[in-house]
Amino acid sequence: MFTIPVILFKPPDTPIGYVSANIFLSVTVFLSYSLATWDWASELRSIAVAGVLEYMLVSSRSILTIYIGLIPVSTVWLLLSLITVYAIFSFLSLPPILSIHSPLFLAIGILSFLQVLVAHAIMLGGTILSADVSGPIMEMLGWLLPIVTGGFTPLSSMPPQLRIVALSTPYSYPVELLRYSILGLETALPLNLMVPISLAYSLVFLLSSLLYFKRVILKMMVEGIRSIGMH
Picture 1 (tube, rainbow, N blue to C red):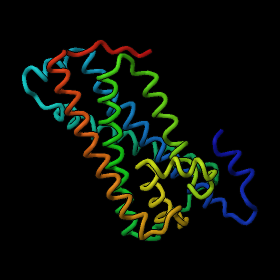
Picture 2 (picture 1 turned 90 degrees about the vertical axis):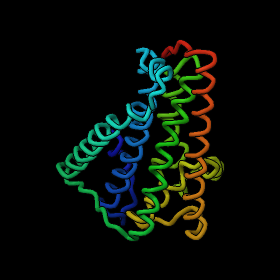
Picture 3 (picture 1 turned 90 degrees about the horizontal axis):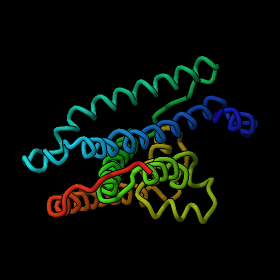
């Protein structure tokens, strides 16, 4: 459903494998955001509703112990999903052409992307714990973020106003580096700016999310855990 319009209206001189690779990378970004939103961040709501979070706070247990078991399982499901998507493309005679143009920039892009995913999950989880509802927050961030921050399309193809919005967030820079290193697409900013901004912005985002989450936990220990609904 998502690939047919892209394939039908692609430029005539663009190889079909290149288009498939672009779509595959977009699906990877979307599934990664979904993982951070619905697996990692949502787990905090689940343990809060079940009373596990309150027990962990009272007994001074680390919340990290929950994620030691959760993250490997969710990562395996992500890999299986990507393998399935790649197999479907190959079955439809649209195997993505994936080639590494720059191993260094690929490593930097993956590192920055992982930091952003973890920061996203921590920030969203803290917001869920401090708010009365979780459904609208998760839906908005889980679906809108990949769209408005260049997860589905290169920033160079986005309207200038939306491109400014995307560049003001830490989400767009790692994806731009991934597109450059795998697809060879030029980044919205020169690489000598894109790389340091991506590393610094993702790290600042991660540290900020940790400080925010710590503040939420300290507030909960004073005021108690609020009732969390989905709507």
